[in-house]
Image (cartoon, rainbow, N blue to C red; front, side, top):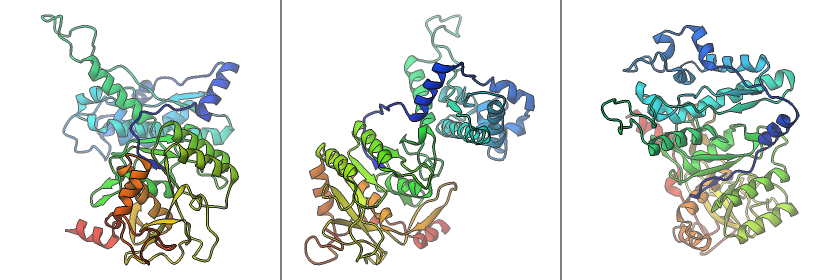
Length: 427
């Protein structure tokens, strides 16, 4: 998980994209049919289009087929699955009109990011079911249709030069739609992450939200009522090396993730794993750090007497420990001369994947993203960023850097206390 950077993504073909090209070279692939006819067959009335979510919407929604992604997601997913089961290799998202221009007719343009993200998720879920049933790989296509306005002719017969929409408006609308169709990695549906610009890598293009990944993302870029991550306005580059598999996190996956983050010029990289030393990983970290990237990792939770864990113990990595609400180091936290900073790691709230909730979390891996976020905000250069954060550190141990707290505690104000938040929301 990483935060920072302003350059647009230039993604290498994913494993899924490579599979698609290989299959297309061997045989004709079948694309699904029209979603419109499937929806018409259901004979939705106004109440059907609204569902519970839009029951009180001030405008009519009948005819807005895309809004069914949010008001009737189970039905839309079943339609996608029906096409897969009928033999389709590729199924399109139900996002033909999910642009701000097209949705403006219904007053639902603010839902465009969610429509595209959820539209992609529904097809991916249907694809996963179909693949599990017969073992055939399935693929998801993002549907981007024309808007209901034309830039080539005038709708006003008395003014041939008039245009109802400009090229720049169309570019912005389609750009917003495309960006949200490819978001993934963490559970961007969580209220604390819906605003975030999340760019993903790994898992063959599939989004596989995990509790830990979502929690870390919220500490980096989250924002909700009474809750904020360390850098809520930063771009989040999320590289998933686990993909929901217990055997995930292999060195090859991690190296590929580092390579992607380097290509994207992500200035601060937060690594959410610990383990024994690995020669290949060490070489990559040395190379990444030499290019000016900052790498942050948790010291681990094996206790003060345990041997140092990696990658935090590599000299190029900024190792982070955790403290509780009383600024006491967590008793399970690792110790050693590699410890650089301490940050809140207990008595704090994080986003919960698969729900709208926040829940308490504990561990050094929740302290590390707070330090990464602070470094991302300060990252004009690697050395300057570390110096800026170091100046704000509260020295909790012996004077100077020590093996328990490092340079000291940073990000104390970023702890979202469960009791305090519950009290503030009750008022």
